[in-house]
Amino acid sequence: MASLQGPEDDVFELLKQDVNPKAKEERERAVNERLQAQYEKAQKRLAEVIDSNSTLPVTVSSVKVLGASRTRKGFLERIFRPLLNTNQDGPYTLAEALREAQIAANKLQRFDLGNAEGSAYGNLLWRNILGGAETLNLNASLGTRTRSAYSIGFETPILSNPDFRWEIGGIASSTQKSWASHEEVLKGVGTKLRWSNGGHNHELGFSNTWRQVTGLAGNASPTVRYSAGDSFKSSITHTYINERRDYPLLPSRGYFIKSVSEIAGWGPLKGDVAFWKSEVESQAALPIPIPGIKGASGISLTTGFRAGLLYPLALLGESSPQLSRINDRFQLGGPTDVRGFRLAGLGPRDGSDALGGDVYAAGSVNLLFPFPRVGADKPLRLQAFVNGGRLLALKKLGEKADNQAVQKSVHSTIAELGNGLPSLAAGVGIVYAHPVARFELNFSLPLVLRKGEEGRKGLSFGVGINFL
Image (tube, rainbow, N blue to C red; front, top):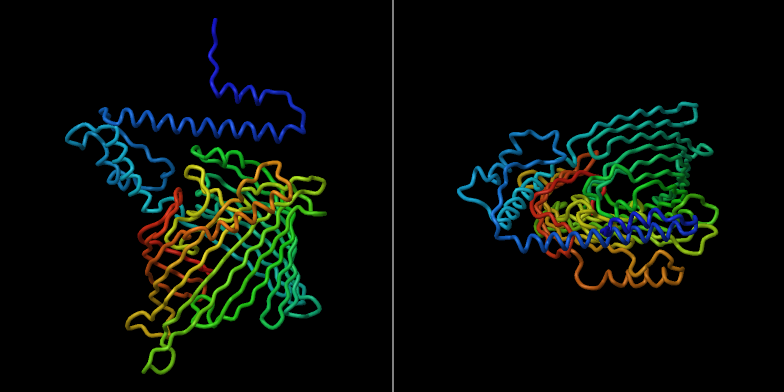
């Protein structure tokens, strides 16, 4: 009797092989490559089937929307009722049915359902608990995106100096990363030393963090599935901030500089991830006077720039630098980031999943005007903006790359940032600077969009304390 063996059986046989521990990494890589090849082959086969049967009649009898348990049934019915055959004059062809389904899906996507439906936050601050200006800070938050986040921190001044402080604390959080079809769970402890000198603020920290990529969605890409599991990061971080803006949430003059550097898993640092990660950010604001108007006109020009690099390192005792993980890479795009793009809408992707990148650069130019009949002294502005950026993964870097290969890949990837136009968007909007946070309601139009990236044409709403 003859037997048939498909590609799935090949993967099964590969996983059954009794290999020694040293071959584990090679086995996992081979399995992932095989699954990726099967996935691409299945996509190609599906496209061929659709193309060859595009004129055949089909019937759409029902539509099921997943992940919308909090959304009213009547609301969804108004969106998808026109798609059903019972509401059409004649039968669909397969091509027509797919086109109408895409129109309905796009309409639903424009409502941004399920990503930010609500959250609750609580804070407890206990001051001077030991009589030396110490503070104990406890925070807890629950939400639909950040499912839970808890932190505790004890801070005390050193030598009675308010500009020299030490903190020790811990965190535990669970965050839904919908743009990459997974949930990230964190638990960690750390300590920080902070000091200031003439407006120059420094923070030196050490932390140990257990991370878990879990809760994969049913349609998670092969790359995200391969990234699932646990990792442990032991790192030292330094942050420098020089704040010279007159009003950080709505500056009209001055500048801001920030740098964050982190080294993980290198030398005596433990853990199973190793990298050097550096990020810089700057902003400048310039008031624009109007002839004939005394005092501040309320019109200002602001520019912003951000850039980052994640450089792979080798763990102690190993020769090959580690490739970056999805929970360490940079993400780019969103209403407080590069406007005109969806959250994590720029950079490498596998299907619908944003994979993040190792190198990025982004910038913006904003022109702000006083709101009509409100006055320049109020924290309300109209704005026009152009912003853009690029997010890239390191090029031509295999699992067994050495230090020289990593260095060459980093140089070529940085050079690629200037190859062609960045992804660009422009728009107009309303800005309100509340004492706690800045609120923006913008209409954006993507101008340059690379293949696979997700732009956002239309209205978007952003809340935060740090905008590009």
